[in-house]
Structure formats: C-alpha cells, structure tokens
Length: 495
Ligand code: NAP
Image (tube, rainbow, N blue to C red):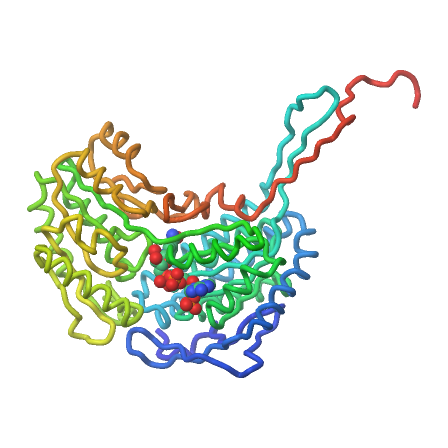
C-alpha cells in the first residue's frame, strides 16, 4: 500500500490539453487536500478563460481526424485505454482514496465500474447504425445517418471521480466526438490519471482534454462557445438548471444527471435481513454521498420494529476511518459544509419528533468523520425527507398502505432512483408503475452497471448514460431525402 501520493505512478498535477501536460500561464494554483486528514496533497492549475478557449479549439481541430476513423478503429483505441485502466486499477483507486476519502475496496469497485463504460462503448463504437425508411412518394428514398454531434464538454462531481468521467467521455469518443472534461475541484487527480492512461493508449492529441480552474469561468466558456455542441453535466440540480439556461444562448444539446431523493420502500412481505443489507449497500456506500443513495426509508407497520432492530445492529457495527485501512467501511465526508448539512438534518428531525436510534454525531476520530446514523419516527415534513442529505443518515418512516407510501414517495421534485422490497410480484408491478423515477431497484440496493440506462426524470435530469441508449446523447441524426434514387425498373439493352 502506498504511503504518500507522490509514490503513485499515475500522479499528474497539470492539465492535459492537445496532448500536452500544462500548468496555468499565470502560475495560479489551488491546494488539494485529503479529506481524511486535511493534509495538502498537491497543487492544481487554475486556468484562465483564454486557456479554456485554447483547449476547445484544440478539441475542434482534433475532431477532423478522429471522426474520419471507422468505428472499429476508435474501438481499438478505447479498448487499449480500458486495458490500461484495468492494469492500473490499484493506482487509480489509490488516487480516489487520497482525494475523495472512500474506502479502498469501494474505490476499486468504482475503477471497475468506470472501466466497464470504456469497454462497453469500445464495443458500441462498432455498432452505430442508421435507418432506411419507406418514403411517401414512389421512386425516392429516406436515409437516416447518425453522425458525431461535435466537440463535447463534460462537468462532473467529486463523489465518483472516475466513473462520472468515463460514463461521458467513452461514449463521446466512441461516437467520433472529441471532448474537454472539467472534473470537480476536490477530485482532479483521478481525471488526470485517466487522461494519462488515455495518452498511453495512443488516443490522439486533442481528442480528450482535462482542464481545471474556476468553475464559473469554465462553465461560462463551455456554454457560450459556439464550438461546443454538447454539454454533459453530473451534479446538483441547481447548477444543472443554471447550465441549461446558459446553454440556451447557443442552443446546445444537454445531458443532465442531477440530484435525487430516493425512496426505499420495504413492504410487510419482504425479507427483512435482505432489505436491511440492501439499504446499507445503497445508504452507507461512499458515506451516503451518492445521487442514488436511499434518502428516505419507508417501512410498513407490520415489520417496522423488527426492521429498526436489525438496522440498528448492523449500522452500529460499521467501521469508520481512513479509506486506506482495509477494515474500514465508511470514510469521511467531503468537506465541512457536507458535515454541517448532516448535522442540520439530524437536528431538524429530532426537533420535529424523530428518535435517534444509532449514531447522530461527529465521530470520535474528528475531522470530517461522522457516525453512521439511524433515525426512527421520521415524518414527511422533516428536512431528511424534503432535501437530498448526501450523508450517512437512514431516516425511517412508518407507513400503512401501498397507496400511502406511493403518495409520499412521489412527493418530491426529484425522480432519479427508488427501491422496493417485496415478494409479491403483482405488488411489484403495481408500485413500479406508480413510482415517478427513472430507475427502480427491486429487492436490491445495487442498480448501477454499464448495461442499464442510468438517469432520472422530473428535476433529476435529462437523458440517459451507459447502455445501448448512452451513445445517442453524442450523435445527431441526418436525414437524406433522395429523390430519383428509388427507380427499380431495370434498363433494357446496353447502356
Ligand atoms: P455541484 O456543486 O453541482 O458540482 C458539480 C460540478 O459542477 C463540479 O465540477 C463543480 O465545479 C461544477 N460547477 C459548480 N458551479 C459551476 C458553474 N457555475 N458552472 C459550471 N460548473 C460548475 O455538485 P456537487 O455538490 O459537487 O455534487 C453532488 C451533487 O451531484 C448531488 O446533488 C448529487 O445527487 C449529484 N450527482 C448526480 C449524479 C447522477 O448521475 N444523477 C451522480 C453523482 C452526483 P467545482 O468542483 O470546481 O466547484
């Protein structure tokens, strides 16, 4: 196990633009800290708007050659990148632990998940296909082609610093687009590490670029620059809304993976042990800092007490600490404001009548560590039900009927993920049909993989990532109306 970040062979602290590693011309940098112990890791360049423009122009020039390659040729580049990510999974996972804080085993799982998108879209690159349609007039043809949309800009959050990038960059590159990625300020090293491996895979200069700097400057340039044809964003609904508004000026295509407020519903006929395990998997992974994390736990009255008891026992045993300790199951929160939000949500719930079952305060380790927490007697008017907590709190709400719980589950502007636990197939169909959300986990807390379409409805987003649908976000349709092309009568005689 590496002791310092300097030993990591993937460590880069410069931006990657047009195949070169560069700092800010102004020399401006920002210190990057480890959330587990507040140690300074390295400094990170703060590029100017002119330097962002330069990266966009480089991506535009690179697209000329990249889009001309066949899908199979692009697939081979992506495959090499995938192989290198796999070969360096420990190094990438270690970068994630240093800058994001999650347990090493979770970081490894994230690297595998991130790699799966590169592999999947390497395969999909070979399968882009259009259509030929029956025309309304005789003797003509309707041909539909799919073409790369153009230069893409991606903006991603810190909570999954590898996967959020590959889930966008791999389909963009597979489609024949070039891209500029802006990682979160807390987690640029994983992005640089991925770019370093893309460089080693031989992906041509300018095809994949990574920039860092002031978020609003980069966002303003991405959304106003006419060269950028597509913005793909993962992050909060508030910033997503702002980026959609800004992108309207130049009518860009947008994909938005935004916030969530996932209901986790357990019916009387569910297997309580399995439901608690599913809840712990989705709730305490990454210290509760996942957009699809269960935010509100609805348990039917017949099993409510038993469920709380099993949950308390299991949550009480979760080990908190530095992610490099292999026995640790929960790392720190990302920053002080995340810690304060968790405290605010607990205080609000207790003031409004909830009971503290487990945890509830800052961890004895100090810093950004917080105890895994369970609240019972929670009601719909509490902040834990209204807002995305993004922390390690399981607030449990008692419910009476299917109709009651669906009404409460849908009482939110979000619609990303939901979870149901039941053994009754008819109930599963009924409730799945009524729940307003883009993804539903049925008797499982693990729903993310490269094969399934990831995304939300309502104010949780626009578009889907991964799956056979993910590449369409980076393709445009072009329709050829070909008159006179459909003359089927064979010519008589020599001509
Ligand atoms: P955030 O504040 O929206 O930040 C996300 C990204 O947006 C960061 O790179 C940030 O840059 C950038 N940003 C901030 N202000 C910007 C601006 N004015 N213009 C352009 N970019 C700007 O979100 P967060 O709090 O870091 O992440 C947590 C949120 O992400 C949660 O709501 C979570 O649900 C959501 N999320 C959604 C999904 C999904 O797939 N639906 C997945 C993961 C997370 P800086 O870091 O430099 O400030």
